[in-house]
Length: 207
Image (cartoon, rainbow, N blue to C red):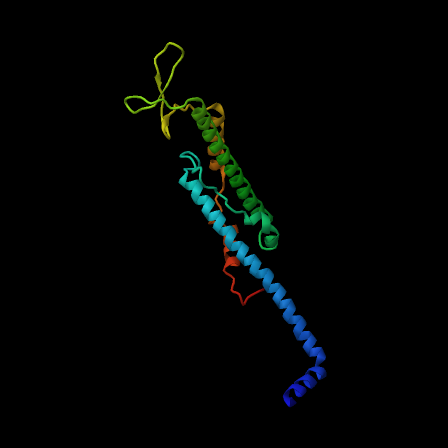
């Protein structure tokens, strides 16, 4: 009890100092939380840039085609956290990163459209051309009235279908190649280096 009373008496006698320390600690925690958020956002943005650039390279900048099962930007931390880096990056660097995200987002929309263009005709073909058993085991579709059955290809499930790219598909593929060829890679630029330094900032260096 004596120790507690002495402690309370000390606090009462130094109320101004205690208030200052509490306020300073609260401000420190607030600033540290902001820096932690910026550091985590920078790390995620760098990861998104690296992953997107790798997908573009693997596709030969669109010439070899993209995987329809994946996106270049599964997440977009730049749009959500751009305000955190306005003091760290030049306006031109912010514009460059924003342009990269805009272009890769557009490529993702084209990939989704390409997938629809491939899937929709295939589904329609399945609905319109039910498979007919043949002695050879292949699948045929009846030609015009009075004509012999016509062989179709390539195979889709249990049926073979001949697919000719539509004008819409050609336009989509052309846009994919065009946009991919104009993207400026960022991962090894000064802008990315600044983000890298922010992402590697130690927890005990909030400023």
